[in-house]
Every structure is written in structure tokens, then in C-alpha cells.
Length: 184
Image (tube, rainbow, N blue to C red; front, side):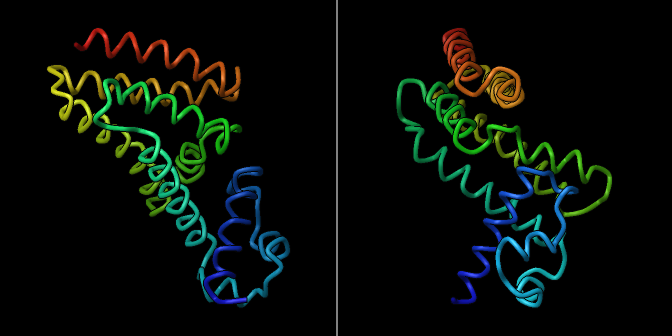
């Protein structure tokens, strides 16, 4: 098994375990055991648990943006609705138990570390994404629309644990259509 393959296995196992049990609920021994790798292999790739968490979040964020970009045609009539639909599918497939970035913010808040910065950065990028989209669509109230759509996605994410991804997304799509209509 190549060095990069072991790293990928470690990241995938760690992400699954962190997502299922929380960052604090998973120790390195469990990750090493489930990844079926040597302790030194883990430390060769990640000097600490925090480094592993950072890389898991970076990898997840990269996947999220890749997923969103592949599902949102920015030149369409309403890329905002497409983004809400794509986010809903992501929730159903990848975030059915809540948002990993919010968990990271909660677990590492005030620790002045890179983990919290990565997680907060993800939220800020979401807002910037919609600001740029609103600007490219020539929306007069681009700041308002970007904040509203971002808030809508965050609410959808939170409601997923309560009513499920499909229902939360259904409500969000209806609300996004109203927001976009009002911003015309």
C-alpha cells in the first residue's frame, strides 16, 4: 500500500469516526485500529490529533465546494435555487447527522487554533460565494440576498437533524424561490 493510500485511508476513517462520534469522542487508538495501520504511520502523516482534524475538515470542505460547483450552473436563471438544491442533496448524502463544521466550532471554540479557523472560514466562504453570485447576476441588494441565502442554507443544515434532509430542503427551495423573486 502506498504512502498516499494510507493517508487517504486514515483521513476517510477519521472523518467517518469524527462525524459519527464527535471530535472529542474519538481517540487516535480507535482511528489506528479501524484504519488498520501502524501507530507510526499515523504520526508520519499527522503529528497530532489536531493536525488530523484540520486535514479532515480541509478535505471535507474541498469535497463540498467541488460538489456545489458541479451542481450549480452560475449562468442559469436561478443559480441560487440550484445551490439550495445541491446543498440539500449534500445534506442527505454527507451530513445527515448535522454539520461537521459547526461541531468543530463548538468543540474547539476559543482554543485559538487552526481547527476553529478552518471551520469558521468555511462559513465565511459560503457567504462570499453568494455575494459573488448575486453580483454576477446584477442583483441590487446583493449583500441582503447573500446573507439570506446563506442563512437559509445554515437553517436547512440545522433542521436536517429534526425533520430530515428532504423535508428541510423542500422548504428551503420554496423559500429560496421567494427570496430570488423579491430580489429581482
